[in-house]
Image 1: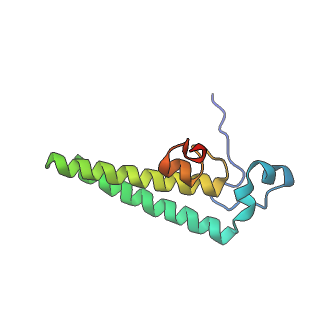
Image 2: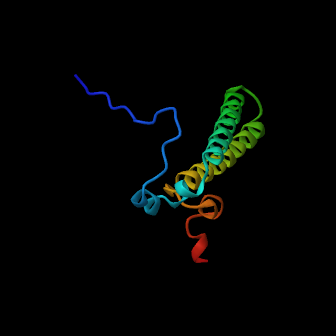
Length: 108
């Protein structure tokens, strides 16, 4: 039987980060609860838009239309990825510049 792992703060904004967590994830300490909620709402909204785009892309139609929908979907992925990396402070891919211009942008 597999063991189920639960997150202690699932569905809620976690408590203020400790000093060691703040050092590891500086953005977590710089966002207020309201700011974090705003970022998460924006991410959810963008993901809904992405879902609608992908539904449209599956509909038979012109190849050019599919290309535009795919470009729009990629743009939303970049936007949402940048939002999530900024809000979490984790930098899965990097900061906004890395998401928008490539990971080597800061070295140019």
